[in-house]
Length: 156
Image (cartoon, rainbow, N blue to C red; front, side):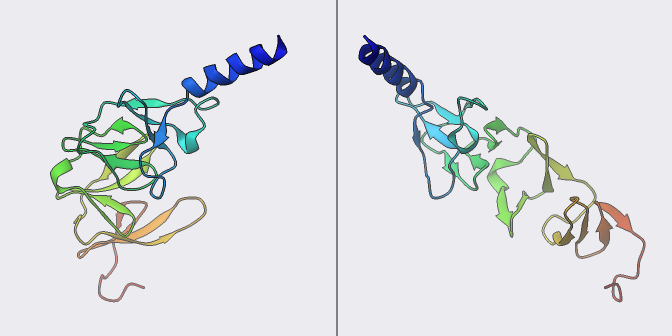
């Protein structure tokens, strides 16, 4: 009887798993199940943390980083659609998510636009352990995404 209960429990748990990795080399968190549904589960820890179903086009779905993916219509961060991002121009530049209009930073479960910066030349100079940053674009330097009033040509 114990063996049968153990076998049933194993079958139940494996049948409820999020599925197989889509691209384990890029992400241990995006899965596809036998029905073709795409899920995000951080590190595959679906029992403790849960999972988010991605309403994504399976034929065009590509993983970009462990948390970021896209299909032909949307960018996804941790499985959540980022409807404010221009998917057609989206790219990663030295770890910074960007599109033709904005550079983005991680804010909870979304990618938030960094306003009033030149997205094409925007880059991080320093990020400290408290997540404070000094950044720059072709025109200005910024502390925590707020413009610093310094002489651009001599600031170090």
